Amino acid sequence: MTIPAGPYAASTQSAPVTEPELSPEEQQFNDLIAADSRIEPRDWMPEAYRKSLVRQISQHAHSEIIGMQPESNWITRAPSLKRKAILIAKVQDEAGHGLYLYSAAQTLGTSRDDMTDALIAGKARYSSIFNYPTPTWADMGSIGWLVDGAAICNQVPLCRASYGPYGRAMVRICKEESFHQRQGFEILLELMQGTEAQRQMAQESVNRWYWPALMMFGPPDDDSPNSAQSMKWKIKRHSNDELRQRFVNMLVPQAAVLGVTLPDPDLRWNDETQMYDLGEIDWTEFHEVLAGRGPANAQRLQRRRDAHDEGRWVREAAAAYAVKIAARKKNASAADSKDLAS
Ligand SMILES: [Fe+2]
Ligand SMILES: [Fe+2]
Image (cartoon, rainbow, N blue to C red; front, side, top):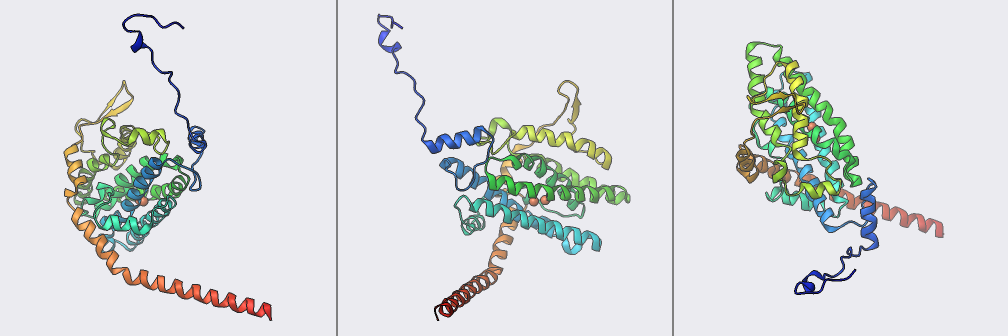
C-alpha cells in the first residue's frame, strides 16, 4: 500500500500493530480459561487473578463465619427441641462453609492466620447482610428463605468458577444451602399458618430482610468495578443485576405460597420483558452498612474478636499436641531403623 504524500503523511504512518507477546504460561492460562477448563493451584496464573480470588474467597469465608452470629442468637430460645436441633445443624454447616473456603483461599498462598488477622482487625470485608439484628424468631425464617436463598442464586453459578478449589467448595456448599433455604421457608410457612400475632411477626420480619437481601447481589452493574474482569476470567458468570432479577423472579411465587407480601409497591410483572419490574433500591443504606455504620457492625466484630481470644488456649493446646505427636513419630521411626540395623 502506498502512503499518501502531503502534509499529513507523517501522522498517518503508524507503526504496525502487533499483539503483545504472551509467555507460554500466560498463553496456557488464557487457553484454559477459553476452553472453560479449570485453573488449579499448581498452574501459573496472573497476579491480578490470584489477588482477585483471594479477595473474593476470603470475603466469602468471613461472611460464613460472621453469618453464624445472627442465628446463634436464637439457639437457646428456639421454640422447640426440633427447631433447636435444626438451627444448631444449620449454624454448624455455616462454620463448615467458612472452613472449606479458607482452605480454598489457602491454596492461593495466603495463610489462614493472615485472613483471620485481617478480619479481627476490621480490615477485611464480609457480607453486609450479617450486620442486621435478629430480634424475633421469624428472623430465622427470613434468613433461611431470603438470605440463604440469595446466597444460592449467587453461588450456584460459582460452582463453575474457573478456579478449581473454589468451584469444588461451592458444589458442596450449595447442596447444604438449599436445605437452609427450605428450613427457613418452612419456619415462615408454619408462622403464616398460625395465629394473627405469628403472621404479623413473619410479615414484619420479611419487611426488614427483603431489601437487604436484594443488596446482597452487590451494587448495580454500572457501579460494580470488579465485575467485568471477574466475568472475563470466568470466576463470575452473571452480572449483579441479572442475579438479583433471577432471585426476585423466584421469590414472587414462593411469597404467594407463604401468603406474605414483598415490601415493594413497585413490584409488578412486565409482559414485555417477561420479568418482574423492581422498585428503587436504597443504595445509601447499602453504602452506610458497607462503611461499618450498619446496625450491628461493631457488635459482630467484637464478638468475633472475643471468640478468637477465648479460643487461644485451644489453638495453643492443639499446636503443642501436634509437636508432641511429631516427636513421638520421629522417635518411633528412629527406633525402627535401629531395629533394622541390628
Ligand atoms: Fe453458608
Ligand atoms: Fe446457609
